[in-house]
Image (cartoon, rainbow, N blue to C red; front, side, top):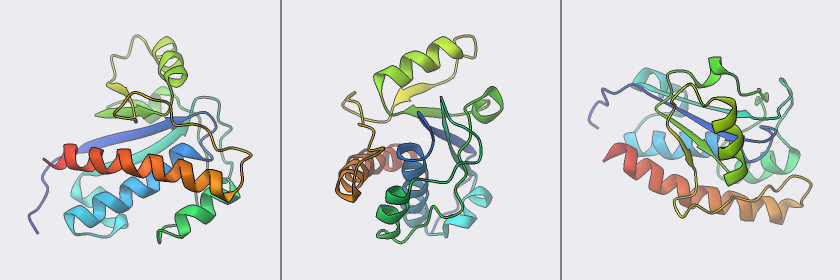
Length: 160
């Protein structure tokens, strides 16, 4: 497989960094690694830094149990995930900051308006990715499916 010579930093952002953004982070890593022919842990060596955070997160929280369950079915793990608050250190030098809702976009732009960062909705249609927090495994699976569809487009866009 050809060697990827780029350096790219992508940060996925939601509210608490325990559901949507960690699922997006780990699934994106999986899709990207598969596409370029490496293991997830090799992505930094290939020039990719993929992170997540929450606009109202408390540092150090585990991923929600149902988020952990639904991503395990894809062969990836959120067992070691620890939530983190979105601050300037997390997002500086980002090539893309991808938020889950229009409200996240508004909050982000208000909070970091002077940073001139490339902030976009994860959804290519511009629709919100609803928060599964408090829902059952089926709700999380539906959310994950929506995230996956958008991530497939993102991987294609980044690597083309």
